[in-house]
Image 1 (cartoon, rainbow, N blue to C red):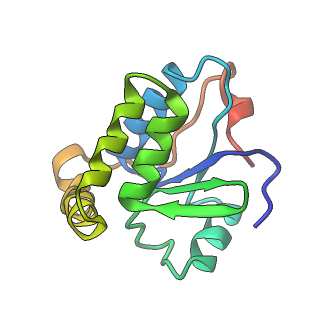
Image 2 (image 1 turned 90 degrees about the horizontal axis):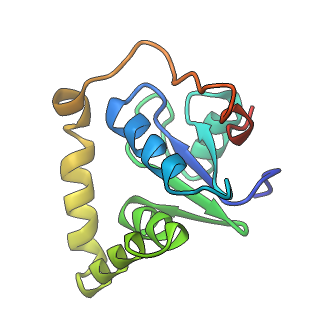
Length: 135
């Protein structure tokens, strides 16, 4: 899979938790290395489908880097590594089996709209960070 920028986070653009996560990454990535793509965009839908996922019911964030796609807890750990210390400490989660980590991820993901809400439209970035969002 080739994207014009690397790495890229695919996220649910109508999820408040997901949008907050993107804001968190933006604030902690001053060199603007990470780029973003809403799953609801045409390219986001295509990539999401290519992973056997339904873009009409997003269930996981995706981390795409160097042609590799990570999902769920693996994606979260990759994001933490990219942001550096102290966020890279999230890799301590590797002591847990993936099944356990992903169960916790899914527990939150399936309740995210109920707990954090959703909007009717995708995040609209400010002009300063718009270049980090793929079209």
